[in-house]
Image 1 (spheres, helix red, strand yellow):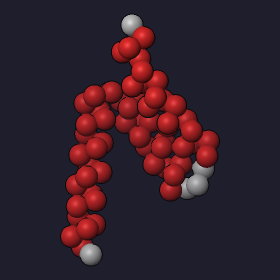
Image 2 (image 1 turned 60 degrees about the vertical axis):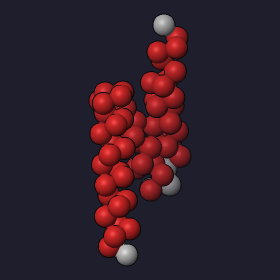
Image 3 (image 1 turned 45 degrees about the vertical axis):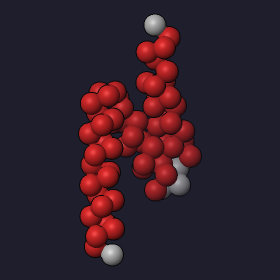
Length: 63
């Protein structure tokens, strides 16, 4: 069990670092909103985080 928890923590930190590297601070904020909304069953936070990430992903193709 501790091995699974450690692996998940490493994955979460790696994902956070990748999002910050790729999308900057707004990407990290969106990821936090998405995770808080999912854990707290708050659909508003989940939707806001998903929309921000979607806009950050689509933004380069709009230019």
